[in-house]
Image 1: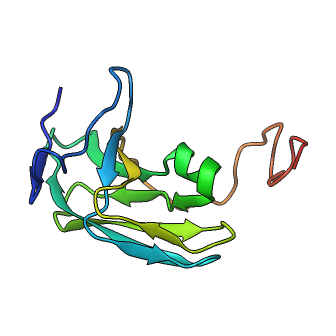
Image 2: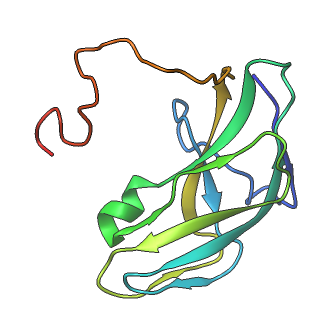
Amino acid sequence: MYIVGVINATENELPMYSYARDSGGDLRAAQDTLIPCKGSAVVNTGIRIELPDIGPYPILEAQIRPRSGLAAKFGVFCNFGTVDGGYTGELKVIMFNLGEADYLVEAGDKIAQLVIAKVERVCFQPALVFLETERGDNGLGSTGNA
């Protein structure tokens, strides 16, 4: 288990896992923020994290992910986000409101999930051709049920 340092958080503001097998810890809003109908807003969490350096490869990243309950009930969700291991500023969450009314995020509301993941680094190289595959360049909707 890795230890992730959290700065500016009280015990109630720490990202918390609700159940033993959850992969994401809940992030909470630091202050009230209005998300207009069909609009977006940046919601502050008030906290900063420090991911441990686990060696050259792999590295750790934090992923900000939506909470399904907010999306299903209110049409409010956050943008997927990547927090690189070297970033130590405040975590902020970009939220969208596809609902039919303005949505008020209140201080302390659960707004997103924070997932810590290992990331493998690769070496990008120029290529002139690719190997032929069954899929090829068939993209969006190529498997049906677009």
